[in-house]
Image (cartoon, rainbow, N blue to C red; front, side, top):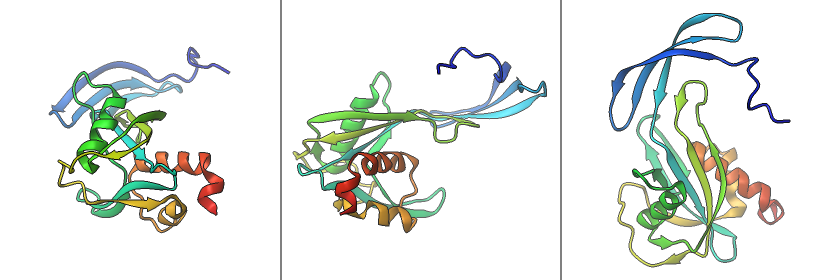
Length: 188
């Protein structure tokens, strides 16, 4: 059922103004009316678009991941290569570029998995998720603050998630996709 043009239940934005703006974040206030008729100001946060890629080995039994620290939430976790889109750069190109910069691997083929909003009620920040195949080590990594990448067995994915060692939403989406599409091989 296509409900993209359904006006019932729509939140109406009368106006939005910027409170703070930088290349990393824009904080705004929107004058909105909810579907029930309540009108008030609501904060908005706009962050740059990002892309993440699950780079698989040729047997599709391992993926490149980094165990790293994130200072804002002060957590450690396993992550996939990824980063912010450069101006005029496609999400796919960003994913391939980030894989090369962070791991030194060039990806031969890319499959789009999904585009999602990690905090859809307050934050605008489209995240694009890909799976890369045909990875070949062609250079040394040029990004040195992203952790050290290693080939992690797909069979460990459920264990890492259950242990709370995956914190990144983009990584979660990619890993859940791999569990769904490689489920039998991953559980053996």
